[in-house]
Each structure stands twice: as C-alpha cells, then as structure tokens.
Amino acid sequence: MLFPTLLSTALLLSSAAAIALPVTSDTDEPAADAVLTDAEVAEYPALSFGADITETAVEKRSGYSYGGGYGGGGQRRCKTIPGDSQWPGTSLWNLLDNFTGGDALEKPAPIGSVCYAGAGMDAAKCASVTENWFDSSLHAAHPSSIMWPLFQGLTCLPQDGPSGTCTRGGYPVYVLTARNPRDVQLAVNFARNRNIRLVVKNTGHDFSGKSSGSSSLSVRTHKLKDIEFFAHLNKYGHSGPAFKVGAGVQGFEIYKAASDNGVAVVGGEGQTVGWGGGYIQGGGHSPLSNIHGMAADHVLAYEVVLANGRFVTADADTHSDVFWALRGGGGSTFGVITSILVKAHADLPTTTSIFNFTASPSDIAAAGGMDDFWAVVKEYFKLMPAHTDAGIYSYFNIFPTAGGVAGQQTFTMLPFFAPGKTVAEVNSALAPVFAKAAALNVAIDPYTVTYPSFYPAWVHGFPKERVGTWNTQPGSRLFPRASWSSPSTFDPLFAAIKAQTLLGGLIGIKLAPTLAKGGNPDNAVNPSWRSTVFHGITFAMWNDSLRDPAAIRENQRVFTEVNMQRWREVAPGMGAYLSEADRNEPEFQHSFWGNKYERLYGIKQHVDPEGVFYASLAVGSEDWSAGVDHLGRLCPV
Ligand SMILES: Cc1cc2nc3c(=O)[nH]c(=O)nc-3n(C[C@H](O)[C@H](O)[C@H](O)COP(=O)(O)OP(=O)(O)OC[C@H]3O[C@@H](n4cnc5c(N)ncnc54)[C@H](O)[C@@H]3O)c2cc1C
Ligand SMILES: *[C@@H]1O[C@H](CO)[C@@H](O)[C@H](O)[C@H]1NC(C)=O
Ligand SMILES: *[C@@H]1O[C@H](CO)[C@@H](O)[C@H](O)[C@H]1NC(C)=O
Ligand SMILES: *[C@@H]1O[C@H](CO)[C@@H](O)[C@H](O)[C@H]1NC(C)=O
Image (tube, rainbow, N blue to C red; front, side):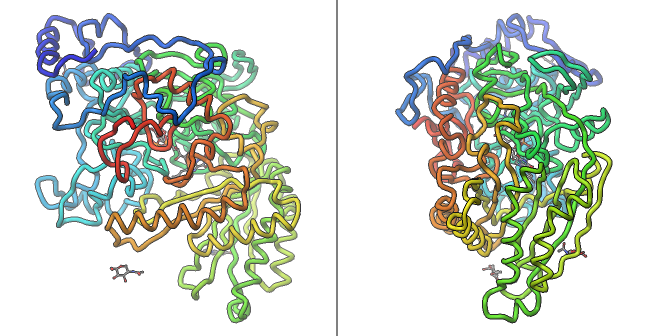
C-alpha cells in the first residue's frame, strides 16, 4: 500500500543502488515483448503489482447495479495532484523513468507553448504548429496534444499567443511513451500505487477528449507499431488469415499491411485513426461494415495490461469477461491493450463514386427554400436499406455552400464505396438519385472508377479530415432501419435530419453492421448498431473567437438539450456511437451500450475496483467527477 512520500522516496533511493536495474543503453532498442516481473519490482512499492483479479465469469454474478454508489468498497479516493504532499517527488519520477531505460518519461510543454512569450517561445516552431494545426498527424505525433482542444480547456491555443498565458489545463503532467507491455505495466503500477490519475493516449482523435486529463500521468501507446501476418492461423475457432497488430497501429498502416498480404481488414475510413486503440475497443465502423459488421466483431484475442499491472491475454477462454468488454465497451476502462489478434478477409475489387450537387439557380430563386436540392437528398436517403443490403457504404456531408447565398447547401459524396461492385452496378444503384436530379435540373457529374482492390480505393476515396477546431462540438445518432419502412416514420426522420443539418451540418455514413454480417459475435458493441442503417454526425458551432466558458457551456446545452433532442425523437429506442458522440450525451450508459451496460459495469467493478482507469463517458465514469468542464481534480462521487 501507500507509503508517505518522504519515507518511500528515501527507501527507494537507497535500494535503487543495490539492485541491478534493467537499464538499456541509448543505442539498444527495448525488446518489444518485454514484460515486468515480480522480482524486478520486489523492492519498489511504487512499482509493485496490485491484487490478483480472478477470472470469475462476471456475467454469472449478481449484485451490481450502476448509479447505486458502489464506491469501490472504500478503496477509491480523490486522485493526488501536483501540490499535494503525496504527489511524488522528482526522485520517484526518476525511478519510473529509470525502469523504462531512462528515455520514455517526459514532462511535455503544451503543444501551443512555442507561440507564447517567455522561455518556451520559438517562432519557427510556432509557425509550423499553427500551419499544421488542423492536420491530425501533428497531434498524433505529439506526446500530449489532442484533436479536440475544447476538452483541454483552451488554455494554450497557439492561435491565442503570444500575449496572455499558456497553462497546462487538461493536458497530463507526465507522459510515458511505451515501447512494450513492460513500459505500460510500469505506468499502470506507478499511477495505481501513487493514486495518480492515469490516462491513455494513442493518437488523440477522441471526440470527447478522453485521451487527456488534468493532473495526470499519461501512458502513450502510439509507438506500439508491430504488425505480424499469419496466412493460415488455426486458433480461437478461426481458420484463415489473421494479423497480430500493435495497439499503436493506425488505419493507414493496417490497410497497407493487409494490401501487401493480399487480404482486407475491417478498419475505419479515417487515415490516421488509431485502429489498435480507441477505434477497435469502441466497436469500429468501416467502409466494409455493410459486408463484415463492426471491426470488433473480428477480434480473436487481446494482449492487455490490467489495472493491477498484470499483462494477460484476453480471449474467449481466458479473461473472457474482459475480452467481451474490450470489443465495444470502449477504451480507457478495462485495461491498456498492447496488441490485437484479428481476422483478415478476402480482398475485393472496389468501385467508388465521387460527386456533389447544390441547389440550382432556379431552386435558389424559388420561394420554397431549396426544395429541389432537398428532394434529391431525400431520394438518396430512401435508398439506404437497399444499398446497405448490397454491401455498399457511403460517406458524405452536407454543409453550407462555400461563398453561396444564405441557406444554400452542398451535398458532397466522398465517396460512395462499393466493394465487389462494377461501375454499371454502382450506376444502377444510384440511378434513382441521378434521375431525380435530372428531372429537377440539379447538376451532378459523378466520377466513378473501379480499383483492383480495397486499398487503392480507400487511398483515393478518403481525403485526410480536418481536426483541431475549438469552436465546434459533435453529436450523433444511430437511425433505425425500421423507420424507412413507411412514410409515416421516414418523413419525420428526414425532416429532423434536414432541420439539424441547416443548423450544424451533417456528416452522413450509411452503415448496417448487423449481427449476421459480423458473424453473430457475442460482444459489447452497442446493440443499436445492429438495427442501424444510417449514422449521422452533426455539430454545435460558434464563433471561433469565443473563449468565455459560460457562453460556450450555453451553446453546448442548447445543442444537447434542444437540437439533438429532435434526432432522439425520430430514432426511438436507438442510441449513439460512443466514439463519435456528444460529450454531454444524456443517459450515455444506455445510449452507448443499451441493455449491455449493467454487465459492463459489473465487469468494470471486478477488474478495476479502485478506479485506476477513468475517462469521461466511459463505463463506470458516473462514479467519478472532475468538476466543471471535467478539468479539475478527479474524485469519487
Ligand atoms: C477524423 C476522424 C475520423 C474517424 N473515423 C472513424 C471511422 O471511420 N470509424 C470509426 O468507428 N470511428 C472513427 N472515428 C472515431 C475514432 O474511432 C475514435 O475517435 C477513437 O476513439 C480513436 O481512437 P485513437 O486510439 O486513435 O484515439 P485516442 O484519442 O488516443 O484514444 C481514444 C480512447 O481510447 C483510449 N485508448 C487508446 N488506446 C488505448 C489502449 N491501447 N488501451 C486502452 N485504451 C486506449 C483512450 O484513452 C481514449 O479513451 C474517427 C475520428 C476522427 C477524429
Ligand atoms: C538508473 O539508476 C541507476 C542507479 O541509480 C543508475 O546507475 C543508472 O544510470 C540509471 N539509469 C538511467 C537510464 O537513468
Ligand atoms: C464538385 O464536383 C466537381 C466535378 O464534377 C468538381 O470540379 C468540384 O470541385 C466539386 N466541388 C466540391 C466542393 O467538391
Ligand atoms: C466573431 O466574433 C468577433 C469578435 O466578437 C467578431 O468581430 C466577428 O465579426 C464574429 N464573427 C462572426 C462570423 O460572427
């Protein structure tokens, strides 16, 4: 258990000299599969393992109900923050650093600090950070930066320099960049033993800022990049191709590896999204979802560091409850995964179509409000069940026309994505839309082409998306296929989507990852996904010069309570996708996990009774609070 700071530091320093530490020289690469042993940490209380976690099948036990103030059996306390007497001194942080080989732990300055007057100012770096701010690779490569700075508190935006102050806000204090499971184990043990808030950052894509946290130690998985291919795996009930993928592997990397080996893997559309991180644990939708379901449906096993620091394999037979939870239950909750064993699939020639349309001059001149434009959009929406049944995915958006008249919108299809289909089949699938457009004098000029396999179709089809805005907040809904069955349900649904699109734009994804398509898996993926045909993402947007927290909060409140309510009303019984949802999603437990929430909550209590892992909107997060805007000290509630 915990020693007072002074005692433990002295103890640690005196024993440090006596023990042969596993030090690597600057030139040696640490072994990728290195694992921490009991013997190594025997004399270091700050790094020792926690209590054993039994493999009891949690689903067979009862007595857990969330919201009842479970409280972790009294083991949970407010997390220690800098300034507290219990916050570790430099020598203890040095010990942690020393165990990793002396170059994994750092205390990074906020990414924007180079733009603020003072010692850290650097004009060239500032210019580069500012220029690349909306590029996801900038934030993925930085130890602590995240792509939705709003949830960091906007305390050091490069755009706000050079006057004013840059403070750490919601960024972590220390970051440990892991090269192997052992580094992760050290970070988990240290944070748990010293009662420090632990966050897990991979790329920083998270829509709710879950890969950051104030006064924390962050363990960073971005550099766990190993990819191993098995042409014929015969294990875990799977007989066929598979990959073992490091938790830091991103979308573009797994797709390249799959292509190089002549197979396909279910992954996201986004180029830089952390495939092996939050993506797969949250479920993961894909351009292949209308053929293969969710990405998590294809996981065979995980390697994971649990809250007690133990490195284990979780699969259908071992730690099966954790395995179930890690396939849809969300990141930063049940452990830190270090690798994923996943099925691969047959590759297919793929046809993509790219097109756009906007309101015609006569439509703009007419009094009705661009009715023709919306009639073409509606024609497209009507086809969603037929398209998803045929295995076709699409990714499109509707935003105000750049430089257009007030209310004018542009629909951009980027792209219509049809694995296994020919150009003729794609043209036929889209024929009703093109016919409607022609009849209404709406110009569409599609660019439709067939690629020999998935990879080039994906490379050409999906441009890198803009991230890093601080004046928008996303929200989303899964819309049920059942609503497409009659005009009495479809018309109000379409009207609600149109109304919110006019306020906050729309990113639309046609997705029907049914259980059958996923191979009938039993996992923690939101059951709403299985009856979805359309995933709509929209935004609250405000003036980018706004910094007043109260005014921002009011914009968020209206978005959540008023605007998004329209979507909730036309999607009865459905929920939202946890990885692309409103940070203030009401009743997130059942919105993100439906009737699976109680089991997930039970598993969380079992494998992490002290609350080592926390992220807002994660399973069990209702037991904790970090105060207003989630930027304060994390305490049990
Ligand atoms: C531009 C863009 C495109 C996107 N496209 C898609 C898409 O096509 N399909 C889709 O399903 N989603 C998509 N998403 C959503 C994406 O899946 C989530 O944002 C996801 O959480 C990103 O995971 P990450 O590891 O890259 O991000 P991070 O922000 O680093 O991590 C996300 C969450 O997972 C946790 N986490 C990360 N790594 C680990 C680990 N090894 N162990 C435990 N916890 C971990 C973090 O603590 C955090 O809570 C997109 C998001 C963006 C911004
Ligand atoms: C680790 O600590 C030992 C003992 O104090 C010291 O000799 C060694 O240089 C340290 N190594 C690193 C990488 O910090
Ligand atoms: C719309 O499509 C045309 C080609 O048909 C293209 O030239 C134009 O750049 C596209 N506009 C947008 C906003 O994508
Ligand atoms: C945003 O706010 C600034 C400062 O109040 C103001 O000058 C600007 O005109 C506003 N921009 C828009 C688009 O309203």
